[in-house]
Length: 72
Image: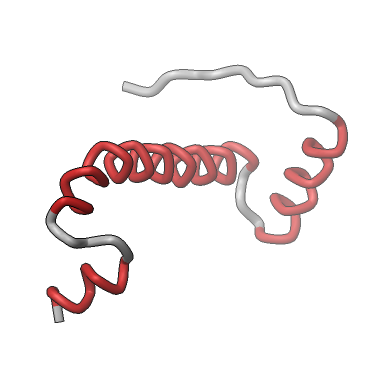
């Protein structure tokens, strides 16, 4: 199932989208869909990270480097 979403863009953003669409040969819908997927993934990741941060800090994981030291 697909859905249609209508959004309002200011003129500058609309022009940027149109230029990128033309220069890449991709549709505006494809570009917007990809941007939305990336943004949603980023927000979901940040949400998960903020929920798990207290547990990680208690276990001594204070930085990304701490995590990678254990993984490698």
